[in-house]
Image (cartoon, rainbow, N blue to C red; front, side, top):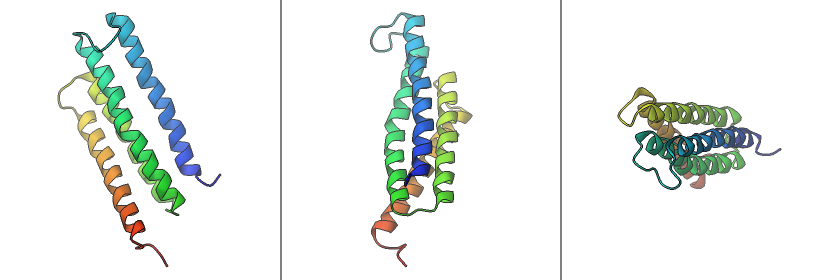
Length: 133
């Protein structure tokens, strides 16, 4: 498979997405909220954890795929994938605990932004021909 690294992380992120979606469904049952978040802070957090994941991960997987197709080293891609996976787990855990500042939320966001920055810079430089031999 030519994009084995991105495929691995796409599968892992797909599974995590399902877990986060299940948390939203569980909240809907628990708080009896059919649409939106009602007035329950726990429901709002579950929806935002899920939505935040959906806002960042597809773009990052796309950037990872482009980097892998462009010949980025596997070790670099695994590094970015692991940072992103740990960051998304930290963020989900931190934000699901409470809406205020937390270790998980802060470092999860920081790691996600670093992965986004790193991939974006790499792809920009690749597009400019910086990595041609």
